[in-house]
Image (cartoon, helix red, strand yellow):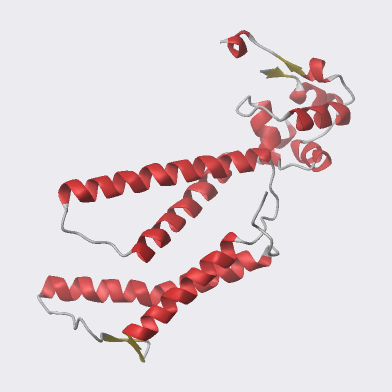
Length: 68
Length: 151
């Protein structure tokens, strides 16, 4: 699953730590999501979208391999 | 559902108890191994060995083992400083690796040293130590550097 967290973070001038703190998770988690090593739960995905003031569907996008 | 109901500082207390009571066990294992290598027989009924001037007999050794397991339980029942879904997954993966490695070690012993016996307590302690190391390493590897934090 693709995501634009890194871009949105930059837009809001936020570090991974800032975002992690606001979402109530660890920095490892944000890093793992950004590097596509971890797919967040629905709740966390909605939290991140709300913090970054963007729609979930704009923040996360399915890619071809997700259908395999 | 979680069984981690103790405050986080119990983790340090538990680990300290576990390691401290494990030192005599390590000394015992080392002494027995050395004796075996030198062809000296260990007394099998009421073993006595000294540790920093203290005479540790078999009953005391058993009590220390029980206290050590208690320390381990304290560690396991203590809350983590911070836990989220990704760290939960890392913990699960560490458990899987620990299980696979344990099975592999037992398999190797069965194939190459069938006569070898292992104390259940030592096996449990070994698994816990292995799990802690793997979990810590996986957490460290998942942590980005400071540069990446702001990229």
